[in-house]
Amino acid sequence: MRTVLILALVLAAGPALAADGAQLFIDQCGACHSMGEASSETGPTLKGIVWRKVAGRADFAYSGALKTLGGSWSPSRLDAFLRDSQALAPGTSMYAVVEDENDRKAIFTYLKSSH
Ligand code: HEC
Image 1 (tube, rainbow, N blue to C red):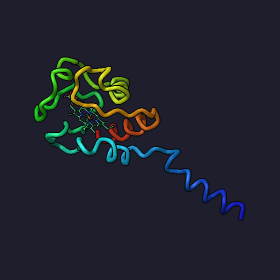
Image 2: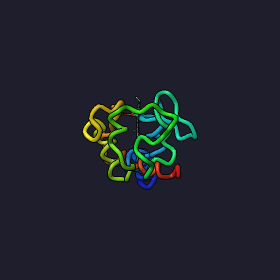
Image 3: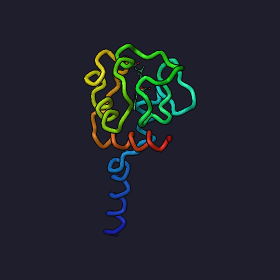
């Protein structure tokens, strides 16, 4: 009986402990971004985003803020952008932020898996 109870508690806590990057992406990014081959009007595709050139997609109309940033999306830069997009690129048209560090890590792992 005790084992069953503990098992039930572990199962209930599971999803909260291990953030699911794919699900977080759908919930928090999917309204504007896809992982497909083409960008949409709402956001650039994020396929292969890790180490991709910043504002590097020819099929998306980026803001001047992102275009002048230069360089590429290193893991630490991506993390900073997701933590506070306006601090990294003031004036960017992306306002979404992910406050929870574990959620950012899970999303990063998911983004990297698209390579
Ligand atoms: C409400 C729409 C919206 C949501 C939600 C959103 N984004 Fe964005 N994102 C944008 C737009 C628009 C841009 C382009 C910004 C610019 O041009 O300044 C962008 C740009 C980016 C870029 C830079 C892309 C490049 O080609 O340089 C990354 C990385 C990114 N978003 C990641 C994410 C992640 C991860 C999430 C989810 C946690 C997310 N975004 C949620 C709209 C959104």
